[in-house]
Length: 388
Image (cartoon, rainbow, N blue to C red; front, side, top):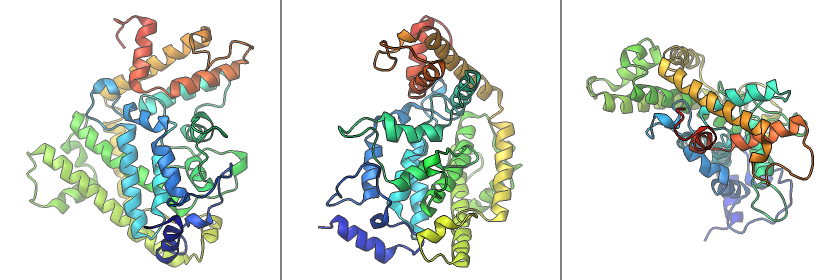
């Protein structure tokens, strides 16, 4: 039988000097006794998996919103893919896989319904109302520190500081890091940097997959990408071009593998060059450590630009995002003019709310909805036969 102390000793033996050890965590905001069998990051991972916000990711979408069908990626499948890719990278680089997994599983908890369209809609509504806007990293942080109520002695999940920093300072092409004064000067671990790269990698390649499946982009479109052509060349004659489904699976697999290999090799070279002796040196270093080679960055940027032009601005995707934004705008207008239509546990009846507080309550309520919940609520307000 392995105890927590055994796992911590294994970390000391097997992890690199630059990796974050469970035994050296900065701890939790609310003191708790150590678990006999699980390390602190294993406990964080388990708390996130059992949270209500994590379960709701199953019905929150990304590019293709729920009324386009059930066969495209959701926030949950994307989150699991990020965790899998992140752990593979972390294992090879001798980083703490449990910390990577915990950050990866929590990094998208704050996303609203309808993917980036929903986030853009809420951000505009909040700014128009005089608030600071909507940042899903900050909201992910608030979910795990305030909104999840599973323990009698504190709000939130009481996660370790390393996971909280990884959530707040998560940043990719699709994200803007959130900042709180309390954590402003704290730098993320290498494990958090791995999650950033795994997230960006998963997005790019799985949007290619969903774009092909939806027929919003074609193989001919993607031939303008040098990275795509290299993946095709890597397959050789193994797959027939006329077998589109098998081609899609195999090329996306090759794309992911090429990028993961490049990331590991480039990061390993950087780590050898920087020669970190401990985690403190990692945190004090301000430059990039985990990342792709210059050649791979250029190839990824070219493919990303192609997706921006051919997929994200495809007329079907634009129709979806317009519908999604209209649904959230309609709901917000109903609640802001008649807030007592919100449940009493959400909107107070015994006092007046300032406008900013009202906006924040409504925003948090809508952001917590799944795609289906938002559509159902919209139908209840605007007639079951209204087309959305």
